[in-house]
Image (cartoon, rainbow, N blue to C red; front, side, top):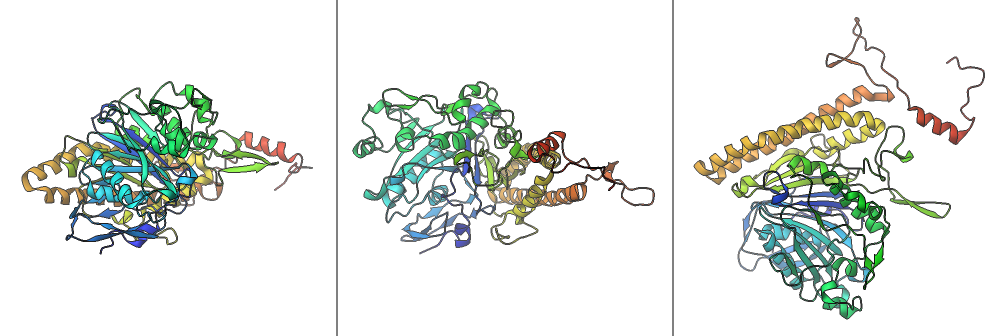
Length: 560
C-alpha cells in the first residue's frame, strides 16, 4: 500500500465548512486572444496556507492500493486501487495540460453525508489529474470513482479544461441511503466564458447531446424518487432541484460571477437585482426566472492578463462597491472582517463577498495551448494571498521542481518563514490595509510590472523550450523550464520583500515620507526631511462629528 500525498499536505487543505469559499472562471479557445483555454481558481479559506503541490509521475505494481485522506482535514477515508502509471501534476495542472478547479455549493443537506464513502472532492481532483489526459477522461475518472467508492463531500462544481475543451461538472452525493452521486457535465460552447462561485449553476441541460453534455443516468429519476421533482424531463433543472438558490446563493456567490462577467461583457446591468439577492420565481415549476446565464460571450477576446484581472474585483463601480460605503473607512479598504452577516436591533445585515478576499490561500490561472508540446503548452499562473494584490508567476506544467518560495513545508499558517511567498505577500498586504488607497497603488504597479514582464517573455521561453524539446528531447526542455519557473518565482518573492520594506519606510506611523529623484529625501545634513501628515479625508471628520456630537470639540483654543 502507498500513501501518495503527505498528511501535512492534506491537513492544510481548506475546510468545506467555510462557506462561500472559492471562485472559478472558464475561458474557451474561441474566447481567448491566442486560442488557449483557461480556467481560474481562488482557494479561499482562513485555515489554508498557500503553497504549490507537486506529484511526479510514477509507476506501481499490480495490486497496489492508494490511501485516500480527506483533502480538507487529513482524515483517513479508505483505500482504492492504484493504476499502473500516474502522471506528473504541478498544483492543479498535469503534464498533459489538463487542469481542474472547484467551488463547493453544498446543496440539499440530506445529501451531504454518505457512510463509508471514500472519495471526497479534493481527492477526486488530484486523483483525476494523475489518471486523465483530457477533460472528458477526467469526467469519466471522477464519476467512475464515486460510483465505485462513494462520494464523501457535499455538492461541488468542478472546472475541467484541457488544451481544446472546457467543461463544468456539478455533482452531489446520494445521501445515506445509496452509494454514489448524481451529476451533470456540460461543455462550455466555443467563444464563450462561464463561471461559478459556491452556487450550483447548471439548470436545464440537453438530454441527447453527448458531444456537449454528459450526466448520470439517474440524475432526474433520483429526484423523482425523493419527491423533489414531478415535472417534465426537459424542464428538469439540476441546480434548482439539488441546490436551490436563496439570498446567500445569489448575493454571496453568484454575485461574484456577475462581477467577473461585468468586467469583460456589457449588458450585465440587467442582472444587478439578482446579484443583490432579489430572486424572482415563476413558471410551471416555480423556479427562479431572473438567474444569470451559465455562459456569456465577452465583448472582446481575452488575453491571460484580462483573465487575471477578472479575478481582481471588489464590485468597484457597481451598487455593491466595497470601497464606497462607511465600512471601507477613511482609506477605502475593500475588506470586511468576518462574520459575513451581523445583527443590529435583531435585524440581520451582511457584508459583501467579493472575488478578491483577504483569506485566499492560493489562486491560479491555468492556461492550456494546443499548438505546443504538452510540457510547454501548459502554464499554471500561480499566486498566493489575496487575488487583488498577488502576482501570478508562470509555472510550466512540465517542470520537475517547485520554487523554494512555494515549496510545501516552507512554513505553515502558524510558522513564519522569510523565504515563503505566502508570508511575504501577506505581510505586505496586511500592512497596506492601514492606508489602503495609497499603498495599493504601489502594489498594483509592481504587480503590473512583473506580470507584464512574465507575459512578454513567454513567447521567447516557449520557443527556446520547443527547440530543446525537438533537438534534445523532453528532459532538456523540462530542465530549462524548471530553471526558468523556479528563478522567476523566487526572484518575484525577493522583489516583493523589497516592496514591503519600501512601504514600511514610506508609510510608517501614519506619516508619508517624501521622495526626490527616486530616493527618500534627506536635508543637506543627511537628516530625513519632515514627512507629510495628510490626516483623514474631510468626509471622515464630518462622520466623526455627526456620530459623537461635541465630544471632541476644542474649547478655548488648542496650543499643542
